[in-house]
Image (cartoon, rainbow, N blue to C red; front, side):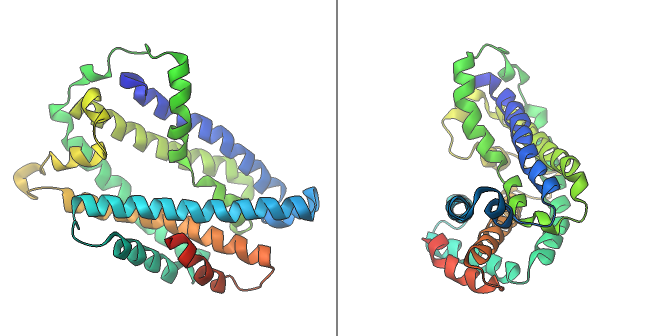
Length: 283
């Protein structure tokens, strides 16, 4: 939408997402020992709280489904062409079910372990593409009309979703008073990574060519080889990282949907809700 100014949308999307996340942060600070469901029942009444909780459950279930579907599409397009889409989706969801049934601590530890394994190799891979970059692709600068920029900002911000799980997992935070700093560091890191990848893709492939591609970031990876030809192509390695990114995202959203469902149904154990949500998320 923004042509050579597209990278600016990434920055704006990150900044606006952080500002929106501060609303979630304010909620966590005000109700450090309550989830959104308990707090909304006291503040808004049972009827409005009921409606908002249903929206919340559907939102996280749909988010889980969308991320799973995108993961499967990429895997099928670049590696497992003959594997049924249904099998890829079911496999990832079942892997997530196995983890989230054990609660939030293993989910958090898995994310903590996988984060550096994700960020460092991604940075290293895209740095390899820089020597053949044409930075004139980032010109002209600031020529996109404000209306076009506004049209591009909403879909860009959708790439930053995830912080809203704090509405349900806020009571698990050890230091709720530091929530704004947590949000700043996490969304700042995501914005920096998105910005880096977007700029590399633009300068490596050209803005006009990128518009015609379904998965341009993966196209960059396929066009490079590791120094010293350690790997002939980096596709498989990139898809392994893609699996990690999808898996950790799905874990958070699926767990939150299950937890919200348990609170909504007023049951003490959330594990049965994981099973109940599974076919709906799959569909």
